[in-house]
Amino acid sequence: MGRGPFSHPGYRWLWSGQLVSIIGDQLFPMAVVALALDREESAFSLGVVFGSRFGALALLILVGGVLADRMDKLRLMMSSDVVRLAAVLLLIALGNGAPLWALALITFLMGAGESIFQPAHDSVVPSLVPEQTLEQANAATNMLKNIGQVVGPAGAGLLVAAVGPRSALWVDAATFAVSSLTLLVVGRQLGERRRPAARQEESMFAEAVAGIRVVVRMRWLMALEAMAVIHVLLAVGPWFVLVPLIAEDRLGGPAGYGLVLSAFALGGIGGAAAAGLTQKLFRRPGLWALAAISLFGVACLAFAVTSSLPVLVALFALGGAGVQFFDVLKTSAIQRHVPRTLLGRVFALDFFASFVGMPAGQMLAGLLVAGAGQAVTAMAVAGAVVFVTTLLPLAVRDVATLGAVAAEPPLPDAAEQTAAAAGGGTPE
Image (cartoon, rainbow, N blue to C red):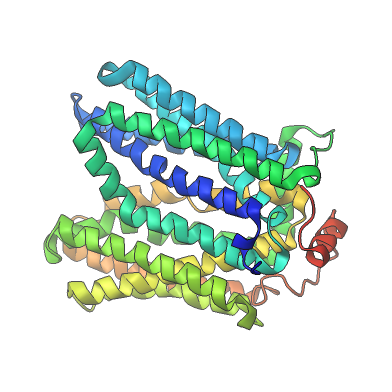
């Protein structure tokens, strides 16, 4: 058998289940949009509905991280699928007459399921593949997500338009059922290595605080998370507001905007693949990761020097590649250096850092920018922010190596982590 992650049956089944889930991830928002647009005050309805998802993530992502460290991760992921399946079935039952509060509740449940699923998924991967293939496994997962972003919205939109939102939701429900079945197979592949969760004596709040302390103590990781919060607040959040304004004025409207978004996602596929294929070449992966994510700053600055759509498409493909390259290396470093008993909480905090500043960043851009000219200037500022804040983490020890040569004493459960590196995966 090969040495890549797909030579391990557990990971193959996990990845296959997520391949099916990507379909559902795209179908649900399209169906909800179709239902909300049929209502009076459709813009208000969309804001309430999609705000409910963010509210669920903000409230429950740390809870999801604690549960991922307390419980059997595969059962937790299956529970998440069941919750989201029930939410979809409820929406099917209510149909076009669903009141706004019900749409908001259903979307909240979908966000709650996501907040439970994501930390468990990221923290179970090291149990399915050997340590030396973590980058390849994470690259394959990130490539899958980016493929979904490229083809998913268009495919989901066509399906909803062809068969209607209710029929599309039946397809969505089927994807969650298939995902749960693949997780059952993954559990069988782990067999006796699937260790039950140890009994916990601390409260969930105390365990959440313990996860925060771990991130703070691992100074290289804390530096990267702080950088992520700033990027999301001052660059990524505004990006979603400013680029449509620029596209409407200079890039041909929605078609140009769509090309830029697709290029970003397509570039991400290449960036994730590059990280998976070249990880063994890097003695200082942190330097390469930070250099890669600075390419997003290049894409932001490009609006100030050109209005050429082909050039911007190429640069945003490069920016997407850099973001995914960075993400694969950082995720793999977390999986490699954080003890298994803490992974769920650390990944929950990592996920939280990636979206906590998004609403404020979008609101800030909306309040300060009035037109395309100001939007170009604001994007140039965002690009400068990305460059400066990408350099700052290098002042922290071990960022350049992503914790590979840590000066701090080992965290609790380090013996388990060492055994995992030697044996190619510690039982979960």
